[in-house]
Each structure stands twice: as structure tokens, then as C-alpha cells.
Length: 80
Image 1 (tube, one colour):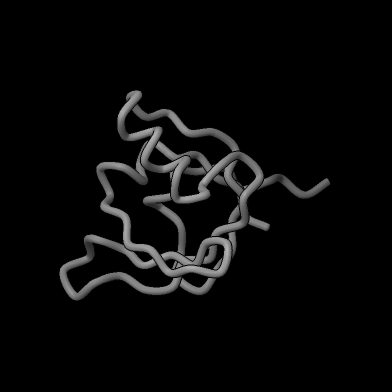
Image 2 (cartoon, rainbow, N blue to C red):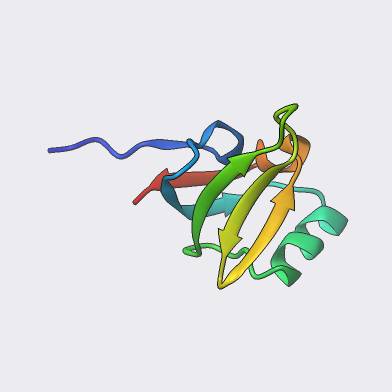
């Protein structure tokens, strides 16, 4: 049986797709993330890192958004 790769979104590799398992943010940051359409079971594709590594561009529900690592280290995903 193949083990699933569960990790924070901040550790995800560019070019790969992941599914959201949980969001462990404070109330205001969580609301912002949910408003962007980032909810459990959403598929996210990591597009590219900025030249300094933060923020990172993600493709979510037909849109490209940039998120900082302070936020993405609290979003738990698994590789799909």
C-alpha cells in the first residue's frame, strides 16, 4: 500500500497538485483563506516561487493567488 504524502502547503513542490486536508489558522486569516475558495478537499497546484522564495503562486479554482509561507505552513495538504 502506498503511503500518502501529508505536509504543510509551504513544503509543497512547484508543478505538483495537492488536496487540502485542514486549515489551522486564526479566525481572521482562516476567513480570508476560505473566502479565496481554499476549503478542505480543494485541489491546489503549486505554480512557482517568487525570486526570494516568498510568496508562492498557486492555482486554485481557476485563479492564481499568491500566499506567504506564514499562512501556508498552517494549511495541511496531501499530494494527489
